[in-house]
Image (cartoon, rainbow, N blue to C red):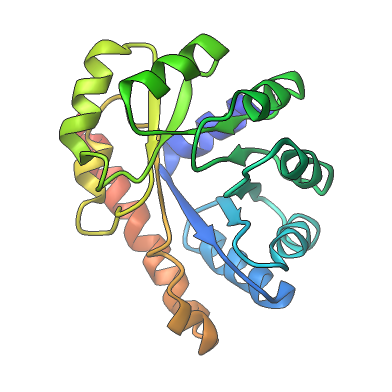
Length: 218
């Protein structure tokens, strides 16, 4: 089973991708393990701290059973670095041809950020069939996704930005949504307090919401 198939299977079972933004490798590993214990095994480590790549690599090397990707990747140079350090997928806030082409050449799944019909069409022309929809709430939320999905019937979306436990099911009930990304699963206050049980609980709640939404969709 290649990485695309693994991701598809994992996200079908638990269609939520939590975001980890950490400065300490030990904390990053503990957070990832807490999320995994709660049923979320696809993790995105966002490059929003100077230590982010080290944190991502530590999760890759010190945990088991996880699919770990890098988010907030802005350039080809960053894509090369995170892939060399173990990233199994790449997430970008926007769509840059060079980054998309590099990831496609490396057979590394890429979720490039889109928010307009023009960007989705460009992603489609580049060969992408699943894209990030960002920032989801500001870009029109569920109504915008319904409109895009009606035109781009082969495209699937990962809404991120403004997604929370309160609106997760609204997004996941859309057939075109493969999963949602979100930072609500890793609240800084709980992590700083070392309360990783709270992270596990949030993950479990998200899994339950996801299963219910998929049942409704079916």
